[in-house]
Image 1 (cartoon, rainbow, N blue to C red):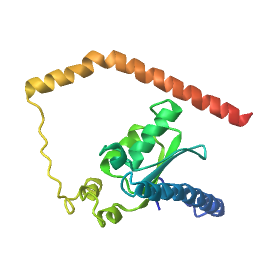
Image 2 (image 1 turned 90 degrees about the horizontal axis):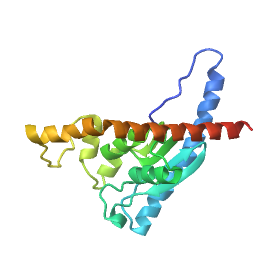
Image 3 (image 1 turned 90 degrees about the vertical axis):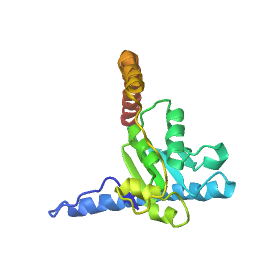
Image 4 (image 1 turned 60 degrees about the vertical axis):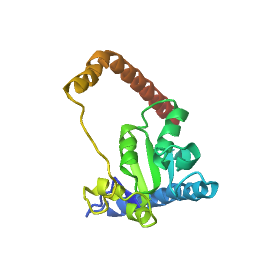
Length: 205
């Protein structure tokens, strides 16, 4: 089990407290990761897609529990983690999940690794390494993109930046829409913080 955040351990009298907390955290992580693995099996049994599951958690409660839906939705982007982010945003009615964590049965691919921080999820815990998926035939470029290597790379993709005129008209969009975009983002964040404050107040009452 891997996590993006590791608990530090002191060398003084606080060691036992830190160790106890770490043990509690491990039990908690195991609980939610097990749910992600259950989704992994469920998706394969249903024929929805590959063996990948993901769970979004908020305040120790599961918000959504999802699996790979690539075949079911005929959508190559419907990976478990992306699906979980999408469904969590729909359920919570917001585009930021800054008070949430995500548990993935396998090390996320580059697309999913991009979606997770874009949603502002605060913590990621994953189970299997990417090599486990690669070993049974899943995309070789996953490990390359994560590690900055070319060992597994076999995918062929041509990438070309548009010429000057094409780039200019595309870049002008940002300048022409920045006021509207800024307004949307600010309103959304105000709503998020309002919900977080309400939940915090409720927990104290």
